Length: 146
Image 1 (cartoon, rainbow, N blue to C red):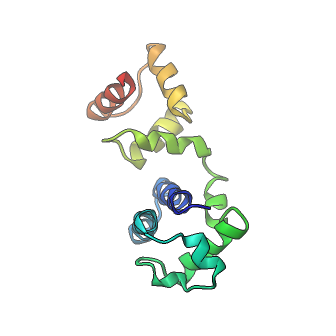
Image 2 (image 1 turned 120 degrees about the vertical axis):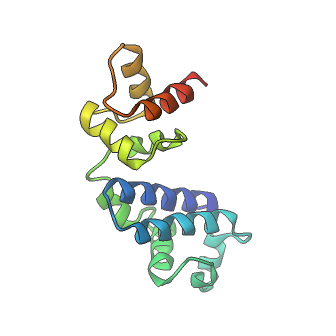
């Protein structure tokens, strides 16, 4: 598993924790770890297999080190599996839209049952209105024009 894949998993976890209205500190820990892992110059899977201490990586403590190990060995981490019991994984696609955050994405999901960028595009093309703020709608429309 590449550093990029590990980082994407932690980034996705931070997103779903934010949707779940989790503690901001916890969200920040995963988001920061994702960035540090993505930028880390050594292969984390290789480090793990060599028995190196993953807590040497900035922002990775014992819990995250164990989660990285689970991710590399098992292919998943329990906390993300738990989050995905509440939300479809495709919802994470909506986080690509710059200028809208987890609260707006959650509103779109809850009010309109939209679970992906494709569904969002179809919904807007149908002429229906999203129940969100005008600035957020503008950001979405701008993003979908690309």
